[in-house]
Length: 483
Image (cartoon, rainbow, N blue to C red; front, side, top):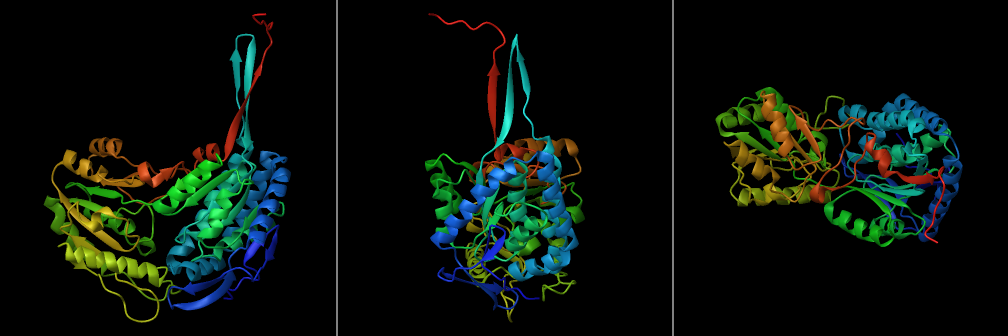
């Protein structure tokens, strides 16, 4: 497959190149080889994208919601028809196994476009009777939206941000991560093919300086970022200076609590999905796994057996179930945390080593006997490292689970549903799970509390983050004044 796009950027419905921009080399994580070369957006490219989005937004907003919805639903159909080639590209972009990308990336993007396409015609205001008078409200688009993506789910994030924005009548300039810049270009291309006005959805490449230029530009009305907490702080501060609307989906150090009555197989499945899917590179991962002392050994035994069955290798092989880290830099960061865990006295149950050969592979790693004060239990690692902690008391483990600056996700495994709901009610997290982990259908709100971000993606909630309410008071009664 040819992974070199015909242009670094997609603006006004066309591929555009400007070789004056800083070089971006795209590396296939499974081999370490460069598979494409792109260029970061220059100031002229940034301005061109924003002007294109500004012009197209007026055309798009003048259409009915039902008309906009048809375009989004057509784009969803095209993505599903091309799922194979888009999944292959996603695997080249991220290194994630095709076994995963073929069911969790482009398909999730298509779900988002279909869902919000279906909602577009239902975005309406309300009537409020006030005696003889009445008030009506109108939901209006914000204008030009900027989406800034992370490198772990480039296709999905491009759609998760684009679909609600477009459904509400906005336009978008999307900047993918410089590590995974390829997939979003295809999303833009498909939206144009589906009938979106040229310039409605633009993609420009770049490093942090390009993102900063977009966030600070007065032509931008809304910013949505998926990224780290430090980046989120900067974006929030910069956007506040211009009073821009903001959605931030940031990091986490999420807990999974496994009680002694839990189904062991289900609990192990949840821990695997919450730690090793996408080689651990998922913001909502439940990397602090609290296991009741009475079942700790049984849990670790079964977990070790199942982790040993991970098929590690060529991500393009449909049998491969565990791929490389996205980059050498990220792998080195994870190895540093593993060394820290060993030094602090945690028990290395399995994994912990680099897999020799091409690419950025590392073994899925499990630590036991982890304590709350260890670095591997406090900081987001963003790699395949699970920390297993002991507990005995429900109140105690809840206090420990919530003792973090993050609040993205949390999960509980128990066959006592009364206890499950009681625990979930006390979790300080925006996205919670009972007897499952990391399910993220578009119908459900997704987002965090505390330092894990503000706002919600997906579901009807997202429409409120991409539109604003205008109220109109209509007086039918006599109007009086004091003089």
